[in-house]
Structures are given as C-alpha cells and as structure tokens.
Image (cartoon, rainbow, N blue to C red; front, side):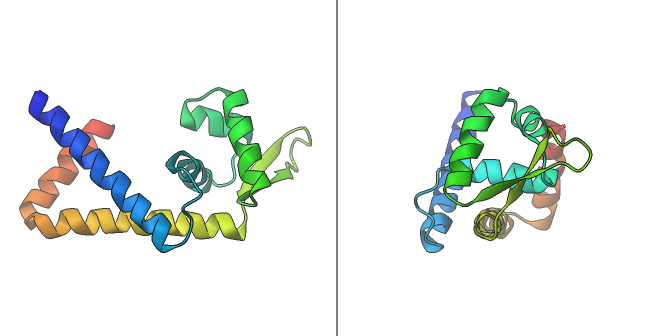
Length: 136
C-alpha cells in the first residue's frame, strides 16, 4: 500500500505541475487550482445553480457562494436568473472563464498525452479499465 500511496502522490504532483505550467503559458497565474476546478465543474454541469454546484463539489453552499462571488468579481463567471424559478440563479462562464476552462482542458490533454507516450496500447487499456473501476 505504501508504494501505491507514493505513486498517487507523485502522479498528483505531476498533474499539479502540468496545470501550473499551462496557467503560466496562458498567462493565468493569478488563479488557484481550486478556482479552475470550480469553473471546470460549472462547465461540466451546464450552468448549475449554487445548490447544484455545492452538491457536485461536496461543499457547503456558503463556501461555494463566497468562491463564486470572487470569480464573478474577477470576471470569470456571471449569474442569470432562472426562467423557471426567479428566486434561483444559474452560474455561467464568461468568455474569460471559458478561456480558462479551455486552458484547463489543454492541461488535462497534456497529462493524457504524457501517460499515452509512456504506456503500450495494452497497458493504456488496462489502466483505463482499472481507473474506471476506482472512480465508479
């Protein structure tokens, strides 16, 4: 188990470094990885409300609200009142937020490419299968 822990720690560090490199390359070094993760989840959920976002992130609604407000202030997000329930607001990425999300996708693609280059097709298929089991 210690070996697995060390591998996970090293992989996590590598992924963090690749994301940091992409942030610098795209000149978004003022953002945290947590803020980038918020935008990634918002994009994935398709403009959620605060409750949906908090649920997806497994965080409290007040915590998510503070983070979202900071991203709105920095012009990465904006809110739109729901047509179905005027009390509810949906969170959208601004153009700047969409650019960040694209950069984040780029970093993930670099990570995938690095893994693909270092494994055979059979090993890659096995890794995908095993990691698929882990994340289910």
